[in-house]
Image 1 (tube, helix red, strand yellow):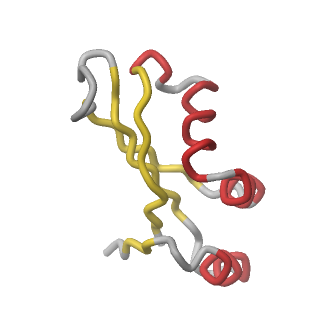
Image 2 (cartoon, rainbow, N blue to C red):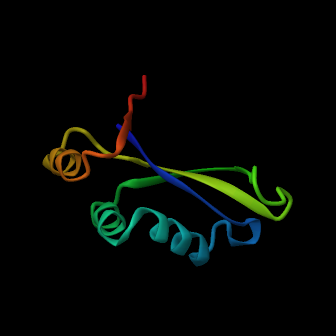
Length: 90
């Protein structure tokens, strides 16, 4: 199952670097970031041109995570972070 975690904006030059992960970590928070990393779940970063800043310099990043629903960790994740919006993939 995929969960929407939020969005952030940063320079396109940060794409694919450690700086991008810093922006994502700042947006989702330490606890959620650590939970996702420790379970080795897949980040899904959907990037597009910024709507509020110059799009040729800045990108908007919609942050998602794919969580395996067949594990006990998914149940704990869903309970602990109940405020997150699940996206059902068909």
